[in-house]
Length: 329
Image (cartoon, rainbow, N blue to C red; front, side, top):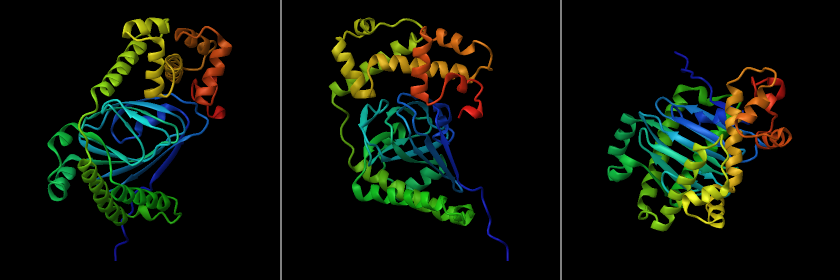
Protein backbone atom coordinates (compact mmCIF):
# COMPACT_ATOMS: atom_id res chain seq x y z
CA UNK A 1 0.00 0.00 0.00
CA UNK A 2 1.40 3.43 -0.95
CA UNK A 3 2.39 5.73 1.88
CA UNK A 4 0.34 8.97 2.23
CA UNK A 5 1.73 11.85 0.25
CA UNK A 6 3.64 14.40 2.26
CA UNK A 7 3.92 18.13 1.61
CA UNK A 8 6.28 20.75 3.05
CA UNK A 9 5.54 21.54 6.67
CA UNK A 10 3.78 24.82 7.54
CA UNK A 11 6.10 27.78 7.96
CA UNK A 12 6.25 30.19 10.92
CA UNK A 13 8.64 33.14 10.98
CA UNK A 14 9.30 35.96 13.44
CA UNK A 15 10.54 39.35 12.32
CA UNK A 16 11.28 42.77 13.85
CA UNK A 17 11.64 44.83 10.66
CA UNK A 18 8.99 45.95 8.16
CA UNK A 19 10.92 44.61 5.16
CA UNK A 20 10.01 40.97 5.92
CA UNK A 21 6.29 41.78 6.15
CA UNK A 22 5.88 42.52 2.45
CA UNK A 23 5.07 38.81 2.01
CA UNK A 24 2.09 39.06 4.37
CA UNK A 25 -0.21 38.10 1.46
CA UNK A 26 1.04 35.51 -1.00
CA UNK A 27 2.16 36.96 -4.36
CA UNK A 28 0.97 40.45 -3.47
CA UNK A 29 3.14 43.51 -4.14
CA UNK A 30 3.24 45.44 -0.86
CA UNK A 31 5.33 48.10 0.80
CA UNK A 32 5.37 48.05 4.60
CA UNK A 33 6.27 51.11 6.67
CA UNK A 34 6.77 50.87 10.41
CA UNK A 35 4.80 53.52 12.31
CA UNK A 36 5.09 52.23 15.87
CA UNK A 37 7.93 51.12 18.11
CA UNK A 38 9.33 47.67 17.45
CA UNK A 39 9.77 46.23 20.94
CA UNK A 40 8.24 42.86 20.05
CA UNK A 41 8.44 40.79 16.87
CA UNK A 42 5.73 40.30 14.30
CA UNK A 43 4.86 36.72 13.44
CA UNK A 44 3.96 35.27 10.04
CA UNK A 45 2.55 31.76 9.62
CA UNK A 46 1.81 30.10 6.27
CA UNK A 47 -0.04 26.94 5.27
CA UNK A 48 -0.17 25.88 1.62
CA UNK A 49 -3.15 23.72 0.70
CA UNK A 50 -3.62 22.05 -2.72
CA UNK A 51 -4.93 25.25 -4.29
CA UNK A 52 -5.45 27.90 -1.61
CA UNK A 53 -3.03 29.43 0.89
CA UNK A 54 -3.65 30.57 4.45
CA UNK A 55 -1.40 33.31 5.88
CA UNK A 56 -1.69 34.39 9.49
CA UNK A 57 -0.16 37.64 10.73
CA UNK A 58 0.37 39.02 14.21
CA UNK A 59 1.85 42.53 14.37
CA UNK A 60 4.34 43.59 17.02
CA UNK A 61 4.15 47.27 16.01
CA UNK A 62 1.82 49.56 14.08
CA UNK A 63 2.36 49.38 10.32
CA UNK A 64 1.29 51.14 7.17
CA UNK A 65 0.71 48.75 4.25
CA UNK A 66 0.25 49.85 0.65
CA UNK A 67 0.20 47.89 -2.58
CA UNK A 68 -1.69 45.55 -4.86
CA UNK A 69 -3.04 42.08 -4.28
CA UNK A 70 -1.92 39.18 -6.45
CA UNK A 71 -2.96 39.59 -10.08
CA UNK A 72 -4.55 36.14 -10.41
CA UNK A 73 -5.90 35.46 -6.91
CA UNK A 74 -8.93 36.47 -4.88
CA UNK A 75 -8.12 37.46 -1.31
CA UNK A 76 -10.26 37.33 1.84
CA UNK A 77 -8.72 38.74 5.03
CA UNK A 78 -10.41 38.03 8.37
CA UNK A 79 -9.43 40.39 11.19
CA UNK A 80 -9.10 38.14 14.21
CA UNK A 81 -7.81 40.74 16.67
CA UNK A 82 -7.62 44.55 16.48
CA UNK A 83 -7.05 46.20 19.91
CA UNK A 84 -7.59 49.73 18.55
CA UNK A 85 -9.32 50.81 15.33
CA UNK A 86 -7.40 50.38 12.10
CA UNK A 87 -8.13 52.30 8.91
CA UNK A 88 -8.54 51.08 5.34
CA UNK A 89 -7.80 54.02 3.05
CA UNK A 90 -8.85 52.21 -0.13
CA UNK A 91 -12.26 51.39 1.40
CA UNK A 92 -12.41 54.74 3.31
CA UNK A 93 -13.48 53.06 6.52
CA UNK A 94 -12.31 52.05 9.96
CA UNK A 95 -12.12 48.37 10.89
CA UNK A 96 -11.96 46.22 14.00
CA UNK A 97 -11.96 42.55 14.90
CA UNK A 98 -14.88 40.72 13.37
CA UNK A 99 -14.45 42.43 9.99
CA UNK A 100 -13.21 41.03 6.69
CA UNK A 101 -11.70 42.61 3.62
CA UNK A 102 -12.41 41.12 0.20
CA UNK A 103 -10.11 41.91 -2.74
CA UNK A 104 -10.41 40.91 -6.40
CA UNK A 105 -7.26 40.03 -8.39
CA UNK A 106 -4.94 43.04 -8.49
CA UNK A 107 -7.11 44.93 -5.98
CA UNK A 108 -5.48 47.91 -4.29
CA UNK A 109 -4.99 47.85 -0.54
CA UNK A 110 -3.75 50.57 1.77
CA UNK A 111 -4.22 50.50 5.52
CA UNK A 112 -2.93 51.63 8.88
CA UNK A 113 -2.80 48.53 11.08
CA UNK A 114 -2.34 48.91 14.85
CA UNK A 115 0.01 47.05 17.12
CA UNK A 116 -1.41 43.76 18.40
CA UNK A 117 -3.43 43.24 15.23
CA UNK A 118 -3.90 39.66 14.05
CA UNK A 119 -5.47 38.38 10.84
CA UNK A 120 -5.96 35.29 8.71
CA UNK A 121 -5.79 35.74 4.93
CA UNK A 122 -7.03 33.20 2.42
CA UNK A 123 -5.78 33.54 -1.17
CA UNK A 124 -7.71 31.59 -3.81
CA UNK A 125 -6.97 31.07 -7.53
CA UNK A 126 -9.46 32.83 -9.77
CA UNK A 127 -10.98 29.70 -11.33
CA UNK A 128 -11.31 27.98 -7.96
CA UNK A 129 -13.00 31.02 -6.41
CA UNK A 130 -15.45 31.61 -9.26
CA UNK A 131 -16.40 27.92 -9.25
CA UNK A 132 -17.08 28.06 -5.51
CA UNK A 133 -19.10 31.27 -5.84
CA UNK A 134 -21.23 29.79 -8.65
CA UNK A 135 -22.01 26.85 -6.38
CA UNK A 136 -22.28 28.40 -2.94
CA UNK A 137 -22.81 32.15 -3.33
CA UNK A 138 -24.23 33.03 -6.77
CA UNK A 139 -25.85 36.15 -5.32
CA UNK A 140 -22.46 37.76 -4.55
CA UNK A 141 -22.97 41.42 -5.59
CA UNK A 142 -21.27 42.21 -8.89
CA UNK A 143 -19.84 45.46 -7.49
CA UNK A 144 -18.18 43.59 -4.60
CA UNK A 145 -16.81 40.96 -6.98
CA UNK A 146 -15.28 43.63 -9.22
CA UNK A 147 -14.06 46.19 -6.69
CA UNK A 148 -13.86 44.41 -3.34
CA UNK A 149 -15.23 45.67 -0.02
CA UNK A 150 -14.59 45.90 3.68
CA UNK A 151 -17.41 44.61 5.84
CA UNK A 152 -18.52 43.58 9.31
CA UNK A 153 -19.44 39.89 9.59
CA UNK A 154 -22.27 38.53 11.77
CA UNK A 155 -20.87 37.06 14.98
CA UNK A 156 -21.77 33.37 14.38
CA UNK A 157 -20.16 33.30 10.92
CA UNK A 158 -17.07 35.10 12.14
CA UNK A 159 -16.67 32.81 15.15
CA UNK A 160 -16.58 29.84 12.78
CA UNK A 161 -13.61 31.39 10.95
CA UNK A 162 -11.92 32.30 14.23
CA UNK A 163 -12.29 28.79 15.66
CA UNK A 164 -10.91 27.22 12.47
CA UNK A 165 -7.88 29.54 12.52
CA UNK A 166 -7.25 28.67 16.19
CA UNK A 167 -7.32 24.96 15.30
CA UNK A 168 -4.90 25.50 12.43
CA UNK A 169 -2.48 27.36 14.70
CA UNK A 170 -2.65 24.63 17.34
CA UNK A 171 -2.14 21.93 14.68
CA UNK A 172 0.91 23.76 13.31
CA UNK A 173 2.50 23.45 16.75
CA UNK A 174 1.89 19.67 16.87
CA UNK A 175 5.28 17.90 16.69
CA UNK A 176 3.64 15.11 14.65
CA UNK A 177 3.07 17.71 11.88
CA UNK A 178 -0.32 16.41 10.71
CA UNK A 179 -0.54 19.25 8.16
CA UNK A 180 2.42 17.77 6.30
CA UNK A 181 -0.09 15.24 4.94
CA UNK A 182 -1.47 16.19 1.51
CA UNK A 183 -4.78 14.54 2.41
CA UNK A 184 -5.07 16.59 5.59
CA UNK A 185 -4.54 19.74 3.54
CA UNK A 186 -7.25 18.75 1.10
CA UNK A 187 -9.73 18.50 3.97
CA UNK A 188 -8.44 21.75 5.48
CA UNK A 189 -8.87 23.55 2.14
CA UNK A 190 -12.53 22.48 1.94
CA UNK A 191 -13.18 23.76 5.48
CA UNK A 192 -11.36 27.04 4.86
CA UNK A 193 -13.30 27.70 1.66
CA UNK A 194 -16.62 26.96 3.37
CA UNK A 195 -15.89 29.12 6.43
CA UNK A 196 -14.49 32.13 4.55
CA UNK A 197 -17.22 32.11 1.88
CA UNK A 198 -19.90 31.87 4.57
CA UNK A 199 -18.31 34.87 6.31
CA UNK A 200 -18.23 36.76 3.00
CA UNK A 201 -21.92 36.00 2.41
CA UNK A 202 -22.79 37.19 5.91
CA UNK A 203 -20.75 40.36 5.49
CA UNK A 204 -22.38 41.19 2.17
CA UNK A 205 -25.74 40.90 3.91
CA UNK A 206 -24.69 43.65 6.33
CA UNK A 207 -23.10 46.00 3.80
CA UNK A 208 -24.10 49.59 4.45
CA UNK A 209 -24.34 52.48 1.97
CA UNK A 210 -21.14 54.34 1.06
CA UNK A 211 -19.59 56.31 3.95
CA UNK A 212 -20.80 59.77 4.86
CA UNK A 213 -19.37 62.43 2.55
CA UNK A 214 -17.67 64.14 5.48
CA UNK A 215 -15.93 60.92 6.50
CA UNK A 216 -14.84 60.30 2.92
CA UNK A 217 -13.44 63.83 2.76
CA UNK A 218 -11.28 63.20 5.83
CA UNK A 219 -9.70 60.17 4.16
CA UNK A 220 -9.13 62.27 1.03
CA UNK A 221 -7.48 65.01 3.09
CA UNK A 222 -5.21 62.51 4.79
CA UNK A 223 -4.25 61.01 1.44
CA UNK A 224 -3.36 64.49 0.14
CA UNK A 225 -1.37 65.26 3.29
CA UNK A 226 0.58 62.04 3.02
CA UNK A 227 1.28 62.68 -0.66
CA UNK A 228 2.76 66.08 0.21
CA UNK A 229 4.88 64.66 3.01
CA UNK A 230 6.07 61.68 0.97
CA UNK A 231 7.01 63.93 -1.96
CA UNK A 232 9.32 66.00 0.24
CA UNK A 233 10.74 63.45 2.66
CA UNK A 234 14.35 64.52 2.21
CA UNK A 235 13.50 68.25 2.28
CA UNK A 236 12.43 70.54 5.13
CA UNK A 237 8.66 70.33 5.54
CA UNK A 238 7.35 72.69 8.26
CA UNK A 239 3.95 71.75 9.62
CA UNK A 240 2.67 75.25 8.87
CA UNK A 241 3.48 74.73 5.19
CA UNK A 242 1.50 71.50 5.22
CA UNK A 243 -1.44 73.30 6.84
CA UNK A 244 -1.32 76.05 4.20
CA UNK A 245 -1.22 73.52 1.33
CA UNK A 246 -4.28 71.71 2.73
CA UNK A 247 -6.22 74.73 3.95
CA UNK A 248 -6.35 73.33 7.50
CA UNK A 249 -5.53 74.78 10.89
CA UNK A 250 -2.73 73.16 12.86
CA UNK A 251 -5.26 71.72 15.30
CA UNK A 252 -7.38 70.23 12.48
CA UNK A 253 -4.29 68.65 10.94
CA UNK A 254 -3.29 67.17 14.30
CA UNK A 255 -6.77 65.69 14.74
CA UNK A 256 -6.72 64.27 11.20
CA UNK A 257 -3.42 62.42 11.67
CA UNK A 258 -4.11 61.25 15.21
CA UNK A 259 -7.59 59.96 14.34
CA UNK A 260 -6.65 58.14 11.11
CA UNK A 261 -2.99 57.23 11.65
CA UNK A 262 -2.62 57.16 15.42
CA UNK A 263 0.32 59.60 15.40
CA UNK A 264 0.86 63.33 14.89
CA UNK A 265 1.99 64.88 11.56
CA UNK A 266 5.46 65.58 12.96
CA UNK A 267 5.87 61.99 14.20
CA UNK A 268 4.61 60.64 10.87
CA UNK A 269 7.19 62.73 8.99
CA UNK A 270 10.01 61.60 11.28
CA UNK A 271 9.06 57.91 11.09
CA UNK A 272 8.72 57.98 7.32
CA UNK A 273 12.24 59.41 7.14
CA UNK A 274 13.53 56.79 9.56
CA UNK A 275 12.00 54.10 7.35
CA UNK A 276 13.74 55.73 4.39
CA UNK A 277 17.09 55.51 6.16
CA UNK A 278 16.43 51.87 7.03
CA UNK A 279 15.64 50.97 3.42
CA UNK A 280 18.84 52.71 2.28
CA UNK A 281 20.91 50.93 4.93
CA UNK A 282 19.54 47.55 3.87
CA UNK A 283 20.71 48.25 0.32
CA UNK A 284 24.18 49.37 1.44
CA UNK A 285 27.38 47.55 2.25
CA UNK A 286 28.92 48.36 5.65
CA UNK A 287 31.58 51.01 5.26
CA UNK A 288 33.02 53.80 7.34
CA UNK A 289 30.65 56.75 7.70
CA UNK A 290 27.77 55.19 5.75
CA UNK A 291 25.23 55.51 8.58
CA UNK A 292 25.90 59.18 9.23
CA UNK A 293 25.94 59.97 5.53
CA UNK A 294 22.57 58.32 4.93
CA UNK A 295 21.08 59.90 8.04
CA UNK A 296 22.07 63.34 6.76
CA UNK A 297 20.63 62.53 3.31
CA UNK A 298 17.27 61.94 5.00
CA UNK A 299 17.32 65.13 7.04
CA UNK A 300 18.78 63.92 10.35
CA UNK A 301 21.55 66.36 11.27
CA UNK A 302 21.72 65.57 15.00
CA UNK A 303 23.47 62.22 15.27
CA UNK A 304 22.54 61.49 18.90
CA UNK A 305 18.85 62.16 18.38
CA UNK A 306 18.81 60.15 15.16
CA UNK A 307 20.45 57.10 16.73
CA UNK A 308 18.08 57.17 19.69
CA UNK A 309 14.97 57.60 17.51
CA UNK A 310 16.08 54.83 15.15
CA UNK A 311 16.69 52.37 17.98
CA UNK A 312 13.37 53.27 19.62
CA UNK A 313 11.42 52.60 16.41
CA UNK A 314 13.17 49.50 15.07
CA UNK A 315 14.62 47.92 18.20
CA UNK A 316 18.19 47.90 16.83
CA UNK A 317 20.95 50.37 16.04
CA UNK A 318 21.47 51.73 12.50
CA UNK A 319 24.82 49.91 12.36
CA UNK A 320 23.06 46.62 13.01
CA UNK A 321 20.70 47.19 10.10
CA UNK A 322 23.48 47.95 7.65
CA UNK A 323 24.48 44.64 6.07
CA UNK A 324 21.99 42.82 8.37
CA UNK A 325 24.69 41.63 10.73
CA UNK A 326 23.20 38.63 12.60
CA UNK A 327 25.15 39.32 15.77
CA UNK A 328 23.21 42.55 16.27
CA UNK A 329 19.78 40.92 16.17
